[in-house]
Image (cartoon, helix red, strand yellow):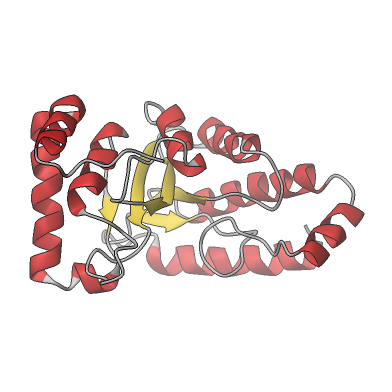
Length: 222
């Protein structure tokens, strides 16, 4: 909320809009304004960091005002694109903080606001994960999609199977699935992902879940 930061970063966003907003291949921009490490909403949150945040007073309200401001800046600079909030837990704030940001975005740009969770897994059903539940709550009002938590082709199994991932996508009525680079460049892996999601869409959530159970591929959330 530093005025110099807001002025200069707003100028950068306006310049980006001047260059890319008319490009038909630019369909979405990430709502960045109070982030670090990635496009998600993470902020420094070590014990020392949290002490410094608390010393600022009501930082939840201050952060919300930052998001409201930059929702307008991004939406004005990119008048045709989706404005994508990459949701995540913010500091020690409750999940309702993300909901307040989403509500602000939908009130300003109801047809273009989008929510993305970067925590999609294929290990279990993702119900109970904050960002997944956020999308479930707003799925009938906001555009929404997912990014894989990890690569499907990774040998450590962190991501899980494309079938369970597809089940989560269908349950949330996802509009898109963003794969990691290695998966996207692999004809085999991306083909498996596309095939699983296509079948899940055709059968629907309940029927596809029963199929996975019958095949021994279903895993419940622990």
